[in-house]
Length: 180
Image (cartoon, rainbow, N blue to C red):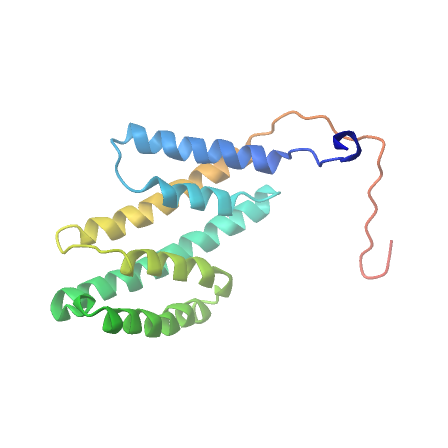
């Protein structure tokens, strides 16, 4: 039964993603466990695209989204330091849910709607965490740095041309606007 199943080969994007994640973890260890490697690894995976050009676009979009989400998250942390609404879970989550509107709308204003997903992820990762007043600033800064590290690693790894066997017997043809 197993010899009848033909599985696709593991592609370079998969391998490069794994390498980028490993490098994120190595940087985390070498930095003395500063930051949260989860965010760097996620950034590296999301930025790893089939082509360098699309990878660069993804990194730019992620960076803009990270900055927007980080700024909104920072604003909520500052607001909570004054009002202490996180002590009332229903109020906290209601405010967070309502804040999704300006968070996403900011991506529309700056014409980066493709960044709305990551903007929300960054925002939620900041405001849903239990961040104490003492480390709130560092948490936001580290969250931004973690993502930027993952973006950079993904771009560098994606530029590396790893030799591989190519199928030279198959001709790929594509039509553009009904013209071949």
